[in-house]
Length: 271
Image (cartoon, rainbow, N blue to C red; front, side, top):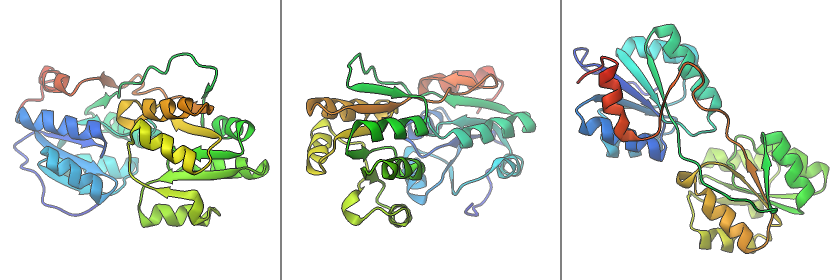
């Protein structure tokens, strides 16, 4: 983590996890209500966006559960609001456990999902391995929009059937290096930051000769309806990876940033 000065210990500190759109909305709502907000994201870019939303303090970097527990104690955190990506399972699990062990409140912000309707071209998968097998069965050119972390799973399944993978990933050197390390060539890497319009998705699917598209069920903030709509415009099958269950038994689930000030006040956490 990047060292920065600590927050005033006389003010309760609310820690917001996540450089997502929801993370910025949560930071803005809490800051506007007078809460002292400490926000973290894995990347410096994510931190910059959180700072623009009004976070009092920022940290960039990843932490495991022990690191989170130490961070909570060191910074005087009284509540954690998990606004990470819906598929960031490990981070959320670590945060829940760290809060339980530290005896503080854990709140999980749940991103709204997109109604995708019923269409025989839209196929659901319970996880990445199932999605990879299904995509390799459905098309010669797999256009992957699920990021780089699980890319190996899709590349291995595709190679087993002689398929090509085109990966749309963040335009960061480490991410591109990871793609190349897995054997993708520059012509297979689309380094762009989304979300994208339906029109741009359609143009990219056409340009790269996609025959099947893979996406997470990441809601409107993740542009899933634009991706699915573009694929269906081209009569392409789409594999949609179901979300993991959010929060769990130890979580207070929040669905609107506007709920948070009242919830925190009801928990005895006041500005």
